[in-house]
Image 1 (cartoon, rainbow, N blue to C red):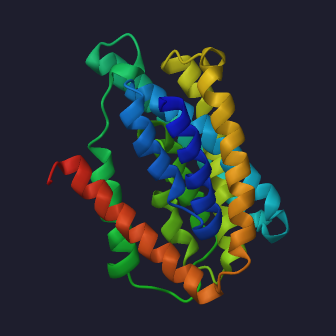
Image 2: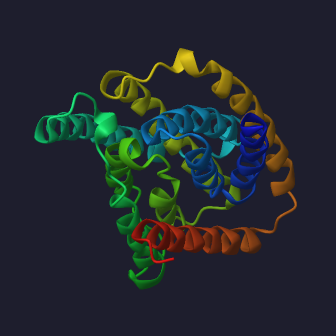
Amino acid sequence: MELIILIISAFMTSSISAVIGMGGGIILLGIMAILIPEGYLVIALHGMIQLVSNSTRTYVYREHIKKNLIKEFSVGAFIGLIASSIIIIFLINLFNVSSANEIKTDFLKPLIGLFILWYLFLKKKREVESSQSFYFVGGISGISTVFIGATGPLIAPFFLNKGFNKENIIVNKAACQMITHLGKIPLFICFFNVNYFNEYNILLPLIIAVYLGTNFGAKILRFIPEKLFKKLFKVALTLIAIRLIIDNLGLF
């Protein structure tokens, strides 16, 4: 029964991400966290599933990719992933634990929620942000992806002020997330002792579900006007930020 719930959730959430560019990944992460007890395993499996989901979106909208942006993000993400490896090794030694899966980092999520709200509503806007900022975006994504799982909401605000249309936003954000999800797989194998082959009974059906869901959502996107898409994108991002703050501070 739990597997059926996860399959349906994977299909629906990947469709959501294909339509509004985000939201599906963090919803799926929340559902998986309820049904799978090991927190580190949730992030590890979620990363593999989202790798397929984002790769599919990247392929579907590939003609809208901004290659320079992706190159800059990749450089930053590579540096960030190296930095996260150093941080993990430091924390393992600091807390004297045998594996990184014993380290809790939930306190980071409210901070990310606050950052999103600041960026959306308080930060002074420029008409078009410099693409060089994506070195920085890649860096923070590479550092945080191992610890919080779904970095989509963290990097999403940076795509709003680029003068992009809906396809540009979806594909370039998906390509960036694909890079960080791919990069963190070796870290989970090395530092968290995750064996992905042992989890094939969960991974395989969910991977198929997100592939189908992404293609289904892509068909719906064609009928959504540009202005409505950007409003939905911002509303979804705001709600996710509020949830990150409330859920992890135990306010309710």
